[in-house]
Image 1 (spheres, rainbow, N blue to C red):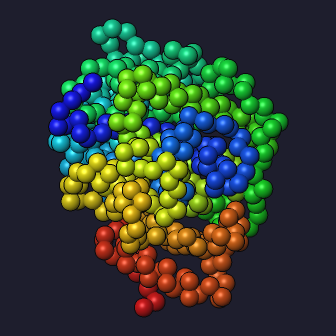
Image 2 (cartoon, rainbow, N blue to C red; image 1 turned 90 degrees about the horizontal axis):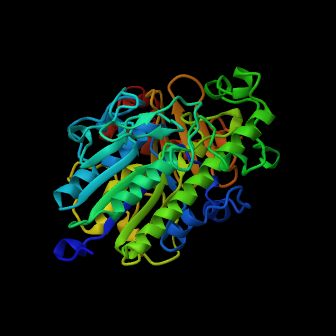
Image 3 (cartoon, rainbow, N blue to C red; image 1 turned 90 degrees about the vertical axis):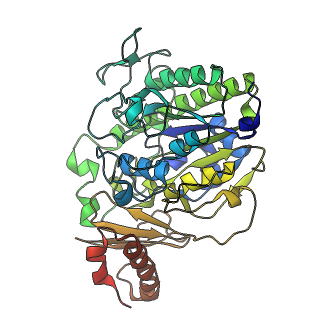
Length: 455
C-alpha cells in the first residue's frame, strides 16, 4: 500500500444517492422515527454504527442541481450559480475535490453530476469536471436503468424502459467502476465520489429487487389526502393531477423505490468489502448521503422541492475510526453547505476561504463548540425563503401562504401556525434571523423579504 508523508492523510470515499428519503435507511428509521424499517440497510447502517450519525442533516435546497452545488462548494445556490436544475455551476467555483487535488490527492468521480447545464447524458470531460481528475464515468444528468460500454467508446445508455441486469443496471455498473478505481495502484491518497442516480424516478428496478417488496405491505402516509393545504401544495397533489395516482399506484411505486434502496445497500456492502480486502477500510473516510428526499405520498405529493421538511431532512453518515468514535450521534443541525468545510476540517486542510457554511468536524471529534443550530432553505424559484431550527420551520412565500410548523409537536406538519397570534414572538425572532441571513448574502430573496421586516 501507499507509504510516505502524503499517506498520513486518509483516503475519502463518498456515496451520494439521488432523492433518497431518510426513512429508507433502517438506522434512521429506528433512531429518528422509532419505526420498524420498511427496508433493512445493514451496509449503509454500518457506516453510521461504526462512525457518526447526523440526525439533523438538511439540504439547503431540495432540488438536485442546487443541493449538489452546495455540497461540493460550501456555498449557497445564488453564489455557486447552479440555483435550479440544469443550470451549470460557476466555472470559478472551487470544490472540495479541487482543494484536495491541490493538496496531493488523486480524485475521481463516477455517476450523475447534474452541475454542467443541459447536456443529457453529457459525459463530462476532465476540463469541466471541477477538480475530479478521473471523470470518464461522470455523466451530467439522466436516470437510465441500463448502460453498456465498448472499448474506445463512451458508455451507451438505453431508453428508460430497458432494464439492465447485475452487470448493466446503472447502480451495479457504478459499483463496479468504484471497485475498479479502489483496486488501482495508488501512489497518493484518493478522493472518490460515486453518485448513484437511484432511487430517483423512473420508479423501477431490476430483478430480483423488483419483486423483493410486496406493494400490499407498503403503508400509505396519513397525510396522503390531506385537506386545506396552501395553494402551492394543493395544486401539486398527485391524485388530483392524475386520476391513476391513487393508493394502489403509490403502493406499487413505493415497493419499487424500496427495491432500488436495497440494491444500493448491497452495492455499498460490496464496495466496503473491497476496501477491507485492500486493507484500507480504516484508512478511508467513508461518507453516505443524498441530495434530497422524496415525498412519496406525504401531503399528497411526490418528488421534491416545495417546503415540507420531508425532502430537506436527509441522511449523513461518516466513518473514520482514527478521529470519529464508534456510535457517535450528532444532533446539531448541519446542512449541505457545511459539508466542504467539515470534510476538510476532519482531514486537517484549510478551505479556500470562499465558503459560507461552517466546519462541523469538531462535533465529529467529540469537541464542544458554539454552533448555529439552524439551517436556511432555498427554493429554486427564489419565491420562498425559510429557516429550520430544532423547534420550528418557518417559510415565507412571496406569493401565497407562508408556513410555520412546530417540529416537535407536529412532526407530520399538518397544523400551519403562521396566522396563530400565540406564535407571533416566534415568527418575529425567526424572521429577524432569516432577513439578516439574506441581507448578509445579498440574495435575490431579500428584494421581497424586506417587506416582512418588523424591527
